[in-house]
Amino acid sequence: MADSPHPHSTEGPAEAASPGRHGMTRRRALGAITIVSGAVIAIVVGIQSLRYLISPIFGVPGKKRWQTVGSVAGMKPGEVRKLSFVMDQSAAYMTEKVNRYVWVINDAPEGSSKLDLVVYSPICPHAGCYYNYNEGKNQFHCPCHQSSFAVEGVVIGGPAPRPLDQLPYMVDDQGSLSVEWKVFQAGEPKQILISY
Ligand code: FES
Image (cartoon, protein in one colour):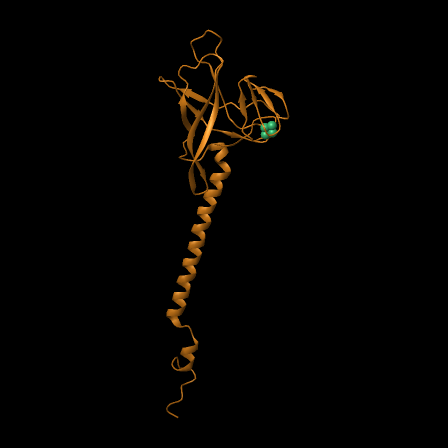
């Protein structure tokens, strides 16, 4: 009789079935860590999503939008020059180097020694292909659906819904050209900025 446990005792079989005070505390702590971790992940993902959504409007914070693309020194009036460069392209958490180029035209009148530049995005405004310059015709031509553009950028043939997209630029004292890289929505009659 002395060995049987008291019905209200906390010792014996009843203690083995209960998680006990320490078990509860540990479980609560683990639960709290899980909730906090989930909240932190949600906040980080939310910030990245927000950055992606507003980047066409405000730009990606810290991203270098202006790119040094090459020299325009000595460009003659009417000359068309393709300038290639490498830029950082960010997507989510990844940044990679990508090859880009722009088309540059010196629109100064014949005989002028000054530069009057126009810089075009190389992306066709019809469906986003990369177009070429046809020196013989002095025109731009897109191989995808046969759109053609005068060097002034206007559409002279094919389905392109708007002229070539111009990019803002700067030229320093040494003739080095920098452009603000922008990408516009293809297939729209008006320019709609979608990314830098
Ligand atoms: S993408 Fe250039 S004509 Fe269609």
